[in-house]
Image (cartoon, rainbow, N blue to C red):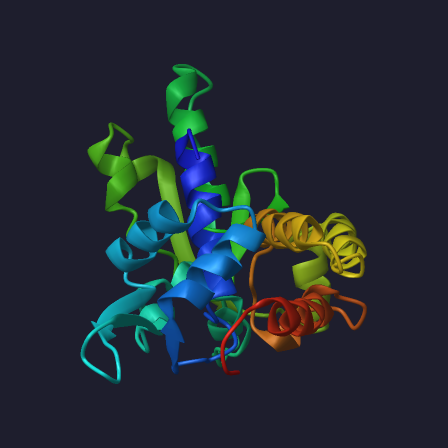
Length: 247
């Protein structure tokens, strides 16, 4: 965990390993938790400090008041909504698209690079050239303007799906679901080799990376062959088998 990315991945892995998406709020014995983290390739005490610091878990007195145990923070999902596919998939859709159109000069390139990073970080889809789309209100745009972008170069508006076009067809145009499924196929492949702890770790890190490229849309906007839901189910079974403590 030498770089920011590795710390991020370790947090993601450790959070899921302690039951973040299994809705386990029961207390976890410290020794069992350290053992589980170790099996998944994480440095136990360092991972525990990260988990507590980022509020995935909290430290509470044990039953006999002579030891400490760790408990999943019930608010951890709402504290990290951008990392929670279940919350994103299950969100109701108001049937409106948010479209962002920009007209930015090619020089200086830093402005286009900054906008591109913002668009991908916030999971917008490229509908056509400089037109980007998402089904929910995007985050505050002021971050872009503070860094030197002219607000007159961006246009944001809402629109229902045009008559004669299915919402799913619009989503397929904006996001590459073939590429997204390929990422999930790798996760499932590693998960099915999960008899070895290192394969559990590989599968979970691949899951983290696959999610980074997924727009995490409301369920109704995914094609029938989308593999994200199946991958979540497969990993849940793997994590249940490999994590110590009551389920």
